[in-house]
Length: 206
Image (cartoon, rainbow, N blue to C red):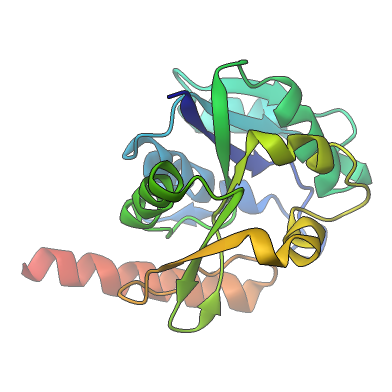
C-alpha cells in the first residue's frame, strides 16, 4: 500500500489577527511548531508544509527538518492556492493526504492515527473525525479526489469537496478528544493558551 502524507497549511497572512499566528508563542514554542510536532508523532509520511506570509521568519523559528517545505507566492489569493500547490509536490506513491491547519496546534496525534487506520481498513475517499462537538479537522482525502481539489479556487479548503461528496465521507468517532480550535482572533488565542496550560498541568499530575 502507498503512503499517507501529511500536509500542513501554514501560508496565511493572519489579517484578522494582525500578526502571524503561526509564530504566536504557545508554551516555549511557536504555534506552528506544535502542529509540526503533532504530525511527527504519527505515521504520516512524507510531511509537507506550505509557507507563504513571513516564510523566512518561520524557517528561522520553527524546526522544519525532514519536511518538504513549499513556499506559496500566491498565498494572498486564498487557502485553495496552498492546497493545489501541496498536491503538486506530493510523491506519486502517496495514496492519500491528511490536511492539517497550521493554526490548530492542539490536534491529538491519536486522531490522525484513527484517520489513517480507517482509510486503510475502509478505503473511503474522505475520512473525517467526528468529535462530541461535531465534525472537524484534520481531514484525510484519497488521491482519487486530488483532481477535484485541484479545481478549488479562492479562500477555501476542502469544505466544498466535503459538501459535494457528502456520501463518500467516512466519519471516525473520536469523541474521546476535544475538537481542536483554530486561531482567528485574540480571544481565540487566549482561549487556546488557557487550554494548553490546562492540558500541561494535567500531564504534570499524571
